[in-house]
Structures are given as structure tokens and as C-alpha cells.
Length: 205
Length: 193
Image (cartoon, rainbow over all chains, first blue to last red; front, side, top):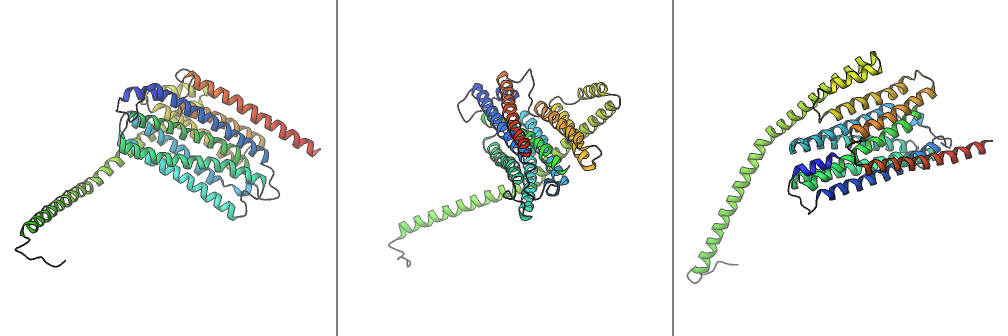
């Protein structure tokens, strides 16, 4: 992967004794984690698809979901993906300041996404459409909530990465962690494609 | 403690005064240097922030211009057929900064593949089944676009074991999700009989 080329070219002083091999292995290990996460999500998707019509006489997606809200969330995540990409490019050309700025923009976009989601969940629970209302809503909250939790952990990771870049500089281990964070963040955007295509759009239709 | 008699304690007293004096001058030094540091940061911060902001907006503008040009090219190509679109995008993409290229192309395609299903659901011009199929196809293509242009997965430069992991995951997902659907919907139909 491009990660290794960068690691080999960076030549900074690492804070751990490790060879490029180790980073390659870590990237592969993280890749395996992402694949197992993909399986978890696909089973949550399957659960949702089975439960989607079991609304127990309660509210359905048609009345609960808002198209503008889903669209705003989609755009926030897509834009955060692209700003993360710009941060990666800035890191590869060694521009620390620009990289941190794009990372900050990514963080704010992700925070906006989580904010919209919490507002949506809060509104649904207040309207009596919480996860305990029907099988459909249990599956909905499990699937979308798991994704939201992942994004929240991604945000925490961005904060940790930012402080590591500030304190330790763009060392090889820091850059390697940052590239894994990139895999995680882009992966979450892929899961979201599934969520708006399987949950929101068919629900509103 | 009361003041000690002057003539007996002159030695230690003058020593204490010395320490006190040097301590005071140290503290003043530290305070002064801290003040000048803070002052410098305060003076430089607005300029630095402005510079960063200018850099970001310049990059964003550059990105936006590239995106607009790319979308125009895709639109022009689409009017002359799919092959035309492909060629038009290729010629255009050859001119962009090679590092930025994958993100730009991926972003443009993702925008289009998101806009189509949302627009169809918002305006609802087609039968329900057709719309659902288009949503599914657009989503599948967009997943591939993200993998290719954002995660940089391709058949030549990605390590083989990563590709094997993807294929294995896809098979597992197919078995588990397909099997669940088979069982659950079959059960659903039997219960309804």
C-alpha cells in the first residue's frame, strides 16, 4: 500500500524500535479488523432488512425519517472523507500545519454528523419511537447507533492523533497510525452508503 | 516570628536577603520572558491563523474548481454517450495534480451516485420497484468507488493478502446474509399461508 512507501520515505526518528515490516503487518492486521467489522455491520443490515416491516402497529420509517436530515448527514460524512484525504496528502508532503487544519475540519464535520444523529434519536425517543417500541425500531437503533458509535470513536481517535502530531511530530509511528485512522474513517463512510440506501431511502419511499 | 536582634543575626540575615533578592530577580526574569513569549504568540497568532485560513481556502477553491470542471466534463461526455463520458473524464483527469486526482474523481462520482437516489426519492417519478433497484445499483457502485478512490484498493498495488481478505469477507457476508434471508423470508411466507 501507499502507506509503506511513505513510511520508507519519511525517515523520521521513530518512538518505537520497529522496521517497515512491522507497519506493514499492522496495516494488514487493521485491515482484518475492518473486514470483521464489515461482517458485523452486514449482519446488522440483514437483521434490519428482516425486521423492517415489523412495526407492531407503531410508527414507520415513512413518518419517522427525514430526507433532508439523512441528506445532510450523508453530505457531512462525504465531505469529511474528502477533507481527511486532503489531510493525508498534506501529511505525505510533510506540511504539518495544513494537515492539522484539515484534520480539524474533518473533526468538525464528523462532530456535526454525530450531532445530527443524536438530535434525530432524541426526537424519535421523545415521540415515543424508541428502540423498545417495535422490532423495526430495535433493529434501526442497533444498526444506526452502532455506526454512530464507530464515528464517535473515530472522533476521539482524531483528537488523539492531533495531539500526537503536535507533541511527537510526523514520526514514522505517528504517520502509520494516521494512515490506519484514514482506513477506519473511509470505511465508516462506506457503511453509511449502506445505511442511507437500505434504511433511509426505502423507508421514506 | 518577631524581628530578630540586628547585631547577633547579621550573617544569616544578610544571606536570607541575598536569597530573597536573587529569587525576586529570577521571578521577574521568568515573568518578563513569559510575558514576552505570550506577547509574541499573541502577536503572531492572528497572522498565523490568517495564513492557515488562506492556505485552506486556496486549496478548497482549487479543489472546487477541479470538481466543477470534472462534473462539466462528465456531463458533456454523458450527452455523447457512456464511452464519450469515459474518454472525456480521462482526458480531463490527466491534467490534475496526480495526488489529488483519485480524491477528486472519487468525490465527483460519489456526489453523483448520492444525488441520483436522493433525487428519485424526493421527487418520486418512477414505480417503487424501479426506484429501489436504482438505489441498490447506485449504492453498490458507490461502495466500489469509495474502495477504489478513497481506500486506494486496486488489483495491482494492493497486497494480495488484503484482496484475499476482501474476497473472503464477501463470501462470508454472502453466506450469512443470504442464508438469513432465505430462512427468515421462507419462514415468513410459510407463517402467512
